[in-house]
Length: 442
Ligand code: PMP
Image (cartoon, rainbow, N blue to C red):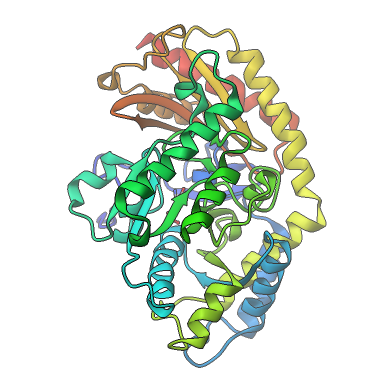
């Protein structure tokens, strides 16, 4: 068979995934892979979930698609109501799209249209953080601070400047209290707003727990609250990107609930459809919606597949499972067990600098030197070796070389299904340990 498909890599042939079974994926040769990262924090219910499959069959028998220019649909309306009921205070409108980048792109455009509608047309700038990823479409890419992804496409269309991430392991000074560190880095936002001119800034975008570019790095307590205050002082919208860390991944349906912060907008995707359907959502404060409703009357945006009935039905079934099986509590208990198992295995490891995260969203940072925190030489391609070794051993994990203010640092992101059992946590940690050992020996 000619092989005409191409993905991210044009080198080499990937195995063909043919089926899924709970926490495992199975390839055409019958090999089983423990899905220790849910792909990229997607498969929160594991694979082949019976309730989601039944809900999708049922929806397909009724209605697959009706264009949102003409109709709404029951699954889309129900999903929006359910998300609003669980969301932080003030969030009461939902815009359904097909994935994370689309959700962030919509957030940036909605912010811009909002300021046009309320007579503040100078507000067009976005501030985000250096260690962040917000998606690969042009607006979302402009917001993200991942240089490696941005460079080839510069200049980017949305004017964005980047401040420091909240990254305690690397940036908190010796003898600086955690809280004080959080306030200091949050205050970089104030400084940047003053530098740009507050009247020109429309939004600050951040992940409450940084995923792909850092490996499950939560903001320290108090950081997001300070950020919220600074945004309020200057009339700037706070957009929290929960595409990876939302939908229960941290043990709360929205990660920012744990920080006790209500943003102006939240983006979610990944775990929303749990991989059963492509779906993302932008959740919005009522005041933003109202300003647009009272102004031009509609959000000047849209995609053909937005509000897709099958995708919404999948997300409703995912929510049924999360709520009905009390999976948020399970994420918290299994997350503690995973954290404990990682600490037993790697707590004294000479090349593990940090173990962190929340719920079933955990990261292990690898360093050449534990004392100085010096990262490995990127030429060693340490994270790529770990990924290959783990995959060979039948473990899917998500190692990356994050950009740390110009330096490269390797980490492994873990985001297993919420249904992970204790023995599977052991399997995950054992296989990861072997993969790291093999990468160090190479
Ligand atoms: N935001 C964050 C925080 C993400 O982690 C991702 C995906 N890794 C995106 C946005 C983009 O989502 P998608 O790949 O579904 O477009």
